[in-house]
Amino acid sequence: MVDVQLARRGIRDEAVLAAMREVPRERFVSEGMEEFAYDDAPLPIDAGQTISQPYIVAAMIEAAEIEPGDRVLEVGAGSGYAAAVISRIAKDVFAIERHEVLGHAARKRLEGLGYCNVELRIGDGTLGLPDEAPFDAILVSAGGPEVPRALKEQLKVGGGLVVPVGDAGEQSLCKITRTGTGSYAEEDLGAVRFVPLIGAQGWAEDGRRSAANHLPGASRDLSC
Ligand code: SAM
Image 1 (cartoon, rainbow, N blue to C red):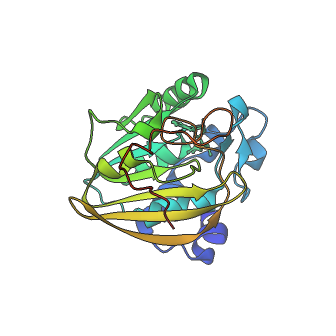
Image 2: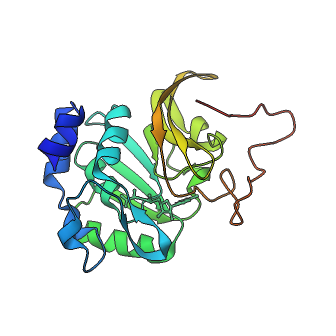
């Protein structure tokens, strides 16, 4: 998987390639799906969600430019796979999942594999984790209508936020870098397709845009 699907398709960061080699993806897929664990594809998990395609996981982690001493937040923990890969590179990982059933299973898997530097929380990740902020990097593994304001504000200066932004069918993978206390740079890393980011600063359950990013006087964060 690492040589054929990742290195040959342009993933260059040795730390990312080593972490993807180390984490057993078959431990994160649903029972009965183990034979497909190393296919270049997302796979279904509980609660109608997916474990992301390995190439996308690697590309997002590479784009986030994570360093060994970093504190990293992942929104949309799902099976816990991406958080596990990040945990092999960063110092501390905080991962949030909105579905309890997924969050509890992911926590158990991560503990079972001895990945002790991951803390898994259940809740709305569009609001980030104010009690643990700021973060060196934030990765969002679900697609929202715009960049959640709370996540931008929880980045350290110099830190990067990688987030899919767009409509339900297709999104742009955006990298937002905090260049100063009140300034950000953004880059479009290409088209992706993720399950929806549902929460106060994402989509509403019924697919409508949530209102929390649109405070009176606030500029819209439609990025990339
Ligand atoms: N990173 C995951 C993995 O490695 O298995 C893949 C996750 S899946 C593509 C996206 C996840 O985001 C789903 O499990 C979904 O429930 C979760 N999600 C969507 N909106 C969320 C929110 N506001 N807060 C936390 N999790 C959210």
